[in-house]
Length: 115
Image (cartoon, rainbow, N blue to C red; front, side, top):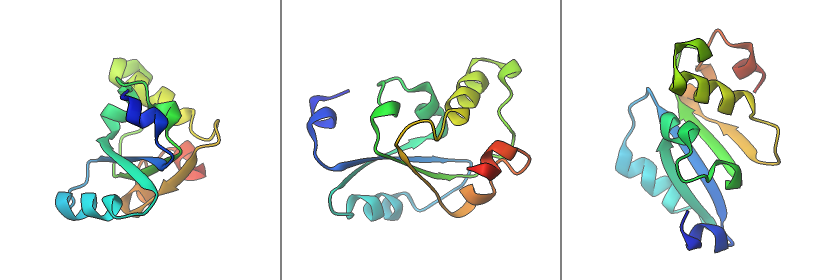
């Protein structure tokens, strides 16, 4: 991850999207205009794959996704990564905010209901 990610004093927010269309410029502007916040808008797939190894360093996770199928670790590596990342939510001091359609994502998964 870049040096600015590690050294910023702003609140680092992962904004996790997917399976739901939205006004990209408007949505980006919303988060870019929050004072003292630096946001990183990304798909759920990018978040769970964590190529930049930043997932644990975000201060807040904002879910704005609408995935419906419960991740099945038996269906491949991405499904396993998704299952692992989502089942670990709440194990750290990261804030978690579930917005809009994400409130009814994974409608058959008790873990998401509990979140």
